Amino acid sequence: MYFYLCLLTVAQASAQQVIVPAGNYPPPVIFTQEQDKQNMMDQLGIKALRPGPSGDEKAPNHANTDEALANPYPNLPDPLVLKNGKKVTTPAMWFNQRRPEIVEDFEREMYGRVPKSTPKVTWTVKTIDHEMVGRAPVTVKELVAHVDNTEYPLINVNITMTLVMPANAKGPVPLLMMFSPGRFPAPSQPNRDQVIKINEALKAVLLKTDPSLKAVFEEHPLYNPYTVPDPPNPFAFARQPAPKISPNIPGVAGENYDQPSTDQLIADGWGYAQINPKSIQADNGAETTRGIIGLVNKGQPRKPDDWGALRAWGWGAGRGLDYLETNEPMVDAKHVGIEGVSRYGKAALVTMAYDQRFYMVLVGSSGEGGAKLSRRNWGEMVESLSGGAHYWMAGNFMKYAAAESKFGSMNPGDLPVDAHELIALCAPRLTFISYGIPGKGDAHWLDHQGSYMATVAAGSVFKLLGVKDIGVSNDYHTEKMPPVNTGLLDGQLAWRQHDQGHEDHANMKYFIAWADKNMNRTSVAANTAR
Image (cartoon, rainbow, N blue to C red; front, top):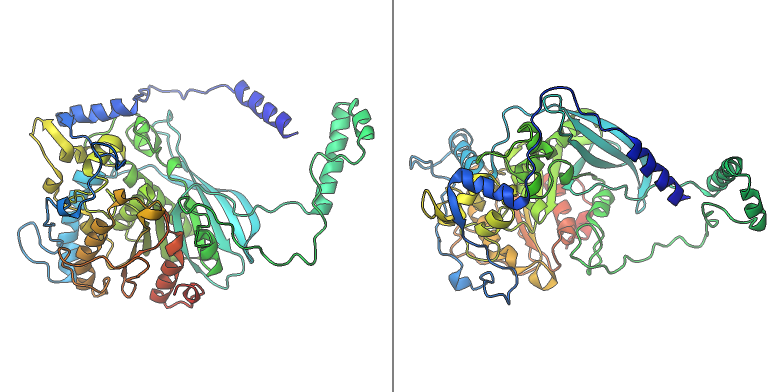
């Protein structure tokens, strides 16, 4: 039956006519990823980029993993010194003078500028379902946000987000927004009697459509188009242990039997939202002339300081927060966090740095462009992003991988900012930097030590603003990364490296308990985060 329905859907779709909007609109430029990169290099006057290192440790150009060679540019820009050399000594100086300087440098040289005017976004609730996550009843909403494209109708952008809220909450609850394709956690299904009724109605329709099926049904009197569920077993009340699944897939149970992050959040009484970053902006350089970036540029290529995908994803998360603030009274809008792993960990940190409405962030295994110091010669490098993922960043970021150009050769040491200052932009809000271990798939490529150094260096800003950092000195030259599974969780800035892979659900119970403590909230997670 499903096969016939699919055929019908395809036939209907193929019969639809493409309606071209009236008006004189320039068609969107169509580039390959390499053409898009070359276009940006041409704009910048770059003739050649240094190749990025290989993640294959056996390759001739493998990434460095020798600590003796890791710090060619050992000194970081001081986040508490103004460009005129004056020391920042008060919170007012930070927010009014130094923070805007750092924001400007990041926008111009790394992540790009969000346009001053972006299109209106209109949210629609597409589907509502009532489900169970573990033993907790939840309400699930499938949401779609249409981005106004009246100024350039040739590009459509529809942001998708799935919102999951505990059904029995007595008041507004904290929520973690996650960069992830949304899904219904446990879609409700018709019960036994309802399935029987559906089958009877479906058979009647089929017989009316094709009377010859009467002979088939008479030959197979117990056949049903849809399987009828077995009656409930009153003795089958115990839930089976979680299966052992590879820890390298975010959002599923890992080797240490941690429940998925979403289950952990619901069990502690939180809500969560999964916002699909690819519905905001595609994760490839061939589509920078589409998505939200293409829409505001009317299908034309980016300029060197235009926003890249990381900022675009963060902008989309902000639109999701707009919806939560205005339409969901059971969401505690003052306690909404943002989360992501890998490239989405980069996006989560960038989102938190720029949108000060987010109360907390969990940054999972983010690497270069996230919590890792760009000045470190270890694993993923500036050259890796400039050559392979240039579209995540502003075009200007390519300059720091230039081997030959009209302005000469530049390197990461020429960057005016680095990852410690991106983390500092989150202060004094709750900021949790999370990693796994190489032995389980969180590769050396990510530079755990460099990310720890960035966290250490960022701590001075948290202290200036009257909150605690990770509880060590801010001397990133000498501080040693703590052992695996040793959390530094006593402040508003936190660090923990878990013993699993390229994911963060092994740290989720620690994040929840830490956030609950800072919100003066009773925590269920604290009982397991030992």
